[in-house]
Length: 214
Image 1: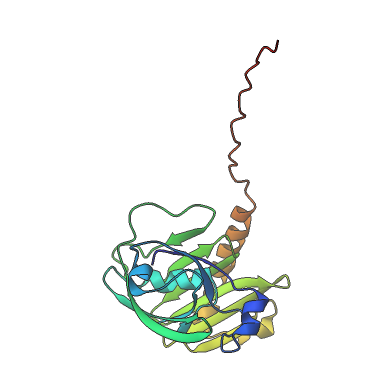
Image 2: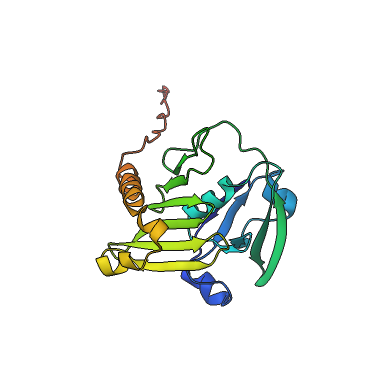
C-alpha cells in the first residue's frame, strides 16, 4: 500500500470513541505515488478496517494484504479530523525486495498447494498469524499469557481470549485448535528473533586538523 504505520496511543482512542480500543493504525508516512497516496490517504490518517475487517495488529493486516494480488481493490475505512471515511485503494506489485528481518517474515503457500494456510510472523509486535479461506487467527501475549484472536472469512469474531488453560483451548474453533501448536512455535520464533542484536551504524568521527597559532 505504500505506508508505514504506528499504533495509536491512549489519547487517540479518547478522542475517537467510534474507534475500538486496540484497533487501527496511524499512518506515520504515505509514500508519494504509492497506492495509498493515489487513493487519497494522507499522513496522520487512522486506518482501522480493510474490506470491513477490524485491524488488530500488523500481522493480521499483512495477512489481509497478502491475500490480494496487484490490481485488486481494498476498501479502507479511516478517520480524518475525527470523521469516519471509506475509500478504495488499488494495490500495486510489491516488488522483489524482502522485508527487513526485524519487521516481519512471510511464509507463502507452496507451489501446487493453493489451499495451504499462509503464516505471518511480526517481530515488532511479537505476534504470529495463520490465514486461509476460513479466516484469520492471531496469537500474541497479554500479561505474559498466550492470547488468541480468531475471525471467520466474513470478518466476524469467533474467539478472543487466553489459551493458556485447557478450558480456554476447548473454546477455540476446532480447525484453529489443531493449528495452535504451529502458532505457538511461530510466536516463540518471533520473540527469539526480536531479541537478536541489530546492526548499529556508528558515525565516522570527524577528523581534526591541527592549526598552528602565532
